[in-house]
Structure formats: structure tokens, C-alpha cells
Length: 377
Image 1 (cartoon, rainbow, N blue to C red):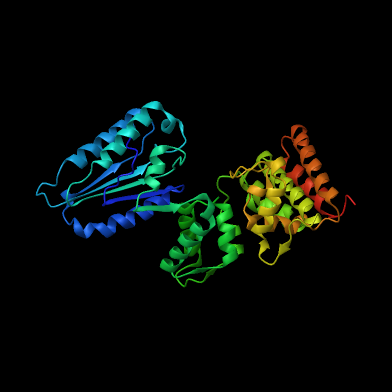
Image 2: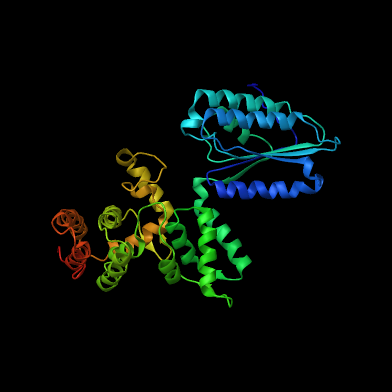
């Protein structure tokens, strides 16, 4: 690869961690350039998805052929290498053969100089430690469609756009709740917003937290949201009702128990930080600045990984932690939350002897833990 970056003037790159947002941003560029290439034969879209090295080679070969073949009448050409996924930190992306093909791809791009030719490359996910992605990121026409740091902002943008198209509105807290349930997935945000708007009917209206809680399942975290939310709120009546609804659809209790353990584990950490005065709970949840300061103070114990980790409170969404912190403050003492964790472990053991009564085990657990919030005092 050349040492000095050399980018074609008409080379557009879109990089990001969310494939939906990357494709959406690249599609906007493609649509903007289309008037310059009105004929179908002036446009070529190449699928950049590859699960094996030979598929990477095939994609690069197709790009080479497209870049070296002029339009039939020599009046310009638009090439889009779309949905490239072999630049990520995955087995295909790490393969030596893929690295050779990536080097060849950069060489082909550097040689593009045909008058009237424009190229778009969109890729997700991207391992930004490697040379080629670093080279791409420095290009004048590089667009960062999405990064993990702006996950919430990206979801809010697509939800707002979708709501505007559907002529409905969504309350800010409902958007935050939706974001937590879909684990920051922009495409799911669009699909779930469409579902919620359809439920409102032709008259439109406002999507609130209650509607999101009732209609949106939790994706990607194995979290059975309503029952877990009710239990973590120390609301016995709501929890018993939510468990009835849960077991109407799910006969198995162990995934729910795991979810409750994960939440309670975070609540224990939050209660320690709250009691120590290292973080505070305000009207808009927990301050990210407070969390960052506490994370720096305790980095020796938790490490500095930015990846989401159920054992590390500092990797969680501040708004989500704010909801958990409300429940974490309800017991009179921290010891109560620790005893709840012990009861959750015991319930796993009870499932062995009560194999046909998972609902009963969970409701007994709820009564023991929530009937008196201060039972451990």
C-alpha cells in the first residue's frame, strides 16, 4: 500500500457500527448522485457481503471489472460497493487472504482517475485498528454514519424521522425506553416505531412509555422486560400481574431469573455508589459526568473496556441506570439488595424440585422479596 494517502476526488466512503444507518447514509449519497447518471447502464451496485475469503476475492474482482469498464457511451459511471462486512474484527476479516484482497482493493481505488467516474464504498462493521479502515477514515469524503458513542443520538434521529413520516409523536422517555429495549439497533427502532404508530390508528397521537412497555419486546439481551422492570421497581402487585402474563407465553423461568440477577447485580453497584455520594439521581436520571468520574476512580477494579458488560455498571446506559437506581434506593439498606440476590440463587435450586411449577416458584420469590421492601433491615 502507498505510504502517502491518495484519494480519488469522486470517492465517497460511509463507515459505521450499525449496518442500517450505514446503508441509509450511503443510499442518500447514491440518490444525490443519480441525476448525473440518468441511464441504468451508467450505474453498478456490487454486493460487498462475504463470509469466506473467496467471496471477498469475488467482490474485489467485480469492483475491478466495474472500475476498469467505461460506460457504453463514455459519459460517466457510478459504482457503489455496498454492505462491505469483511473489514470487521471477525474470522473473515482477520483471515490472511482477506488482508491481501483488502490491500488489492485499496490499490484499485487509488488508481481510479477516469473522468466522470464516481465511487461509493459503505462498510459495517469496521475494525478501525487496521490500515485500510484508517486510510478510508482519512478520506475527504468519509462519513461516519454511526459509532457506539452516539448510539442513543442515532436512534433518536431515526425515531424522530419515522414519527414525522407517520404523523405521530413519541415522548422523550418513551424513546429512551425503546432504545434500551432494542439495544440501540436503528433498524429495529424504525420497525417498532411503525408498529407502535399502527397501533395508535389512523388518527395518530402520542406514543408514551406505557405503550412501549406493552408492545415492544426486549431484543439482544435475553431480558423479559415487563416482569424484570416490575421486580426491579419493588412493586409486588405489578410483578405478580407481569409474571402471570409472562408465563402465559413462556413456561421456562430460568432466563427470567438470569435477567433479574443481572439487574439486581447492577442495582447493588448503584446503591454502593449512591450511598457513597459518588453519583446522584436527578430528574433526568444519573449524570454521565458522575459515572465517568466514578469509572475513572474505580478503573483499577473494573478496567477501561468500553464494551457493554453486565458485571460493570460503568458500561451501561445512564438513562437505564437511572431507572434501576430508583428501585435500588427503595430498600432501607444495601443489605436488602444482597439478600435479594441470594433469594434469586435459591430460586434456581427450587426449580429443580418444582419442575412443573416455575410460575409458582417465581411468584413465591416475588412475595418473599417485595412484600416488605425492608425485610432485610
